[in-house]
Amino acid sequence: MVGLDIGSHSVKAVLLSLNSGYYRVEAFAIEPMAKGAMSDREIQDIEAVSSVLTKIRKKIPRTVKFAAIAISGSTVISKVIFMDVSLSDAELESQIEVEADTLIPYPLNEVSLDFEKLDVNEADPSKVNVLLSAARTESVEARVGALAGGGFTAKVVDVESYALSRAAELCFSQLPADAANKVVAMVDIGATMTLLSIVEAGKTLYTRDQVFGGEQYTRSILSYYNKSYDEAEFAKVTGDLPPNYTFEVLAPFQTMLLQQIRRGIQMYLTSSGKEGIDYLVISGGSGLIEGIDKLLVDELGIHTIIANPFTSMDVAATVERDQLDKYAPQLMVASGLALRSFSSWHI
Image (cartoon, rainbow, N blue to C red; front, top):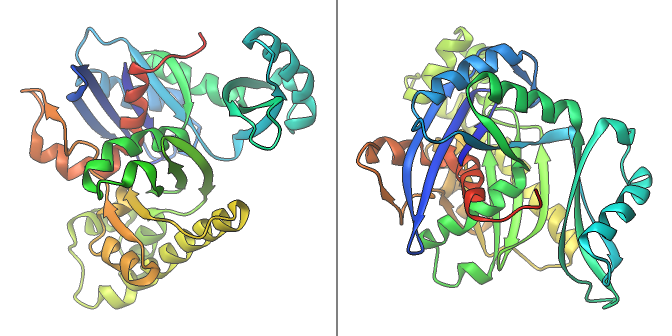
């Protein structure tokens, strides 16, 4: 099942296989998103998104029909609720539907729901912690429809921050040996949205979506140097900017980014009672900005890496390794979605 990360600037695709416990990259693709097709992580033009997905379709083996996609932002609500430990999945479902009215601020006939049992509640062993996720059905259907128009069948609709959490395991080889059991903050800086997922020992402890991203950096270049949007985006990627851009544009953006990450971590520490974060993994397009990892180490004092989920993977003969490594930080969410191929779900 191909993992498709439909972003406001581009669509990223990753296809993985699993043999004898080892993942292999079978294919990947990145295609720019048509301008105006997405706004605030919502699809505005299904046909335009389908057109981009059609280009992705041509780069993925024809035998692969199914895709895992994700939604994020204000239309997604995730909560951990406490239910009776003795309830079966079917009983849980009917009970959750009864209680959902009080938990979700949308009419239930406009919402798609799913849930997953987590673990027995430590404070009250008669209760089980259940993760409830809800999204506006129109958001889900827009993505499913765009996929169909692009030649794919949606098999799984995930939540972006959980896909990011899932991809954490792929980066542990870049971190010290104890990382799998430590508190790791995953920060994915997209064009318009920054995702924060805090994981420990395979569990997602906290997630937060912040409206902040690389678009602010592009717009600073645009206004400071009187460039068009496309010229500013190109200059950002190629580094073709005046020598003093470091002080005029880069440093203010780095300061804003640092504030966003610091605030997100502080909110987690306050709500959880934990003392600190052990490791920080940065991904997304802005993870490619030079010196971000060093800045975060210097300012936050946290061991920080730029994500490459493919470090320990073999690649198919048709995959260009240098291109894969170049774009690796942008492919974290798509990789987390591709991992859904190897885990079960209710359907």
